[in-house]
Length: 421
View (cartoon, rainbow, N blue to C red):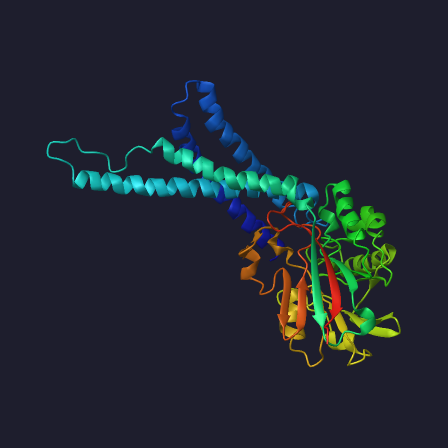
């Protein structure tokens, strides 16, 4: 979406938010009508209106700078996140209130049709009952509290996901070989350095044989990672640290003064991978050797069904032993869906990220849901197609919405095992 269309879209959303405020305001008037103190009634109605409209106006003023040379800063993300919190809460409140209004409308009609003879005609739209407003407020409090938890706690609530995978043709020397994966750091969104360090420490504590990072080091610009280079450089593994680029690393989502400036930014980002101690794989492969045996680690540039398509798998496979055990790093899981799982060359395991699991959803025994599942077939965790595996990391950082709820930031540890004969 171009900048003008982007701004227009958000201004329409802001307009809808203001219309919802009118409906909520009237619902709160019903709720506070019986309060004895006039000041309390005013705080419950006009106080809400001032705060909510103020949030919307601040959001409208900030929209124009979302796509500038710096893109969305943590301040922008907080503004957007608080606006979304109010918007979703208002939508829930209005839905409950609207259902009640429909009910009282039909109640008014039926009451007049079947009214006893001589009874005074009732209005077709009886007064709103207080308990409907109370129910709306109670239900709306759930997303309101949830979103604030997501912003203040959830986005740094790092979770460790462990997965053991078995392969018939895994070289014996790699039986029990461990890989720590993180993805989607999005360093430009961080607003709590010590919380970030907790995630890094959790990853370091796994003491895996290999460390891999599967793209989106920054939101847009190379400078975003600079305050964190010393911290993420702590990621060390005996068999090396390897990385790839994600769609956000190319700087496609902000304005540049020239194509030369944009290209220089990408080159600088590549150098920062080196400063981190990561070997950046750009459509190429390397051999990992252990005990006289080898596996191939392959890394491609971003290839996404709906995003930038630069990754060249054929080029990346050149020089790799066709019979070798192969692990692919590819940022977008749609690459695996469309190009990898049915490729003539067997790629045993693909590690991806990109989706963030939408940073919102439910993952409990018996129920796994996120809105991102309507766009991505494989959006988090493990997928398997005839013993060709894909693992989608839920992401270390966050983007746009400065929070996570239900889909927590992830450090992945994968253990490779030889299938027992």
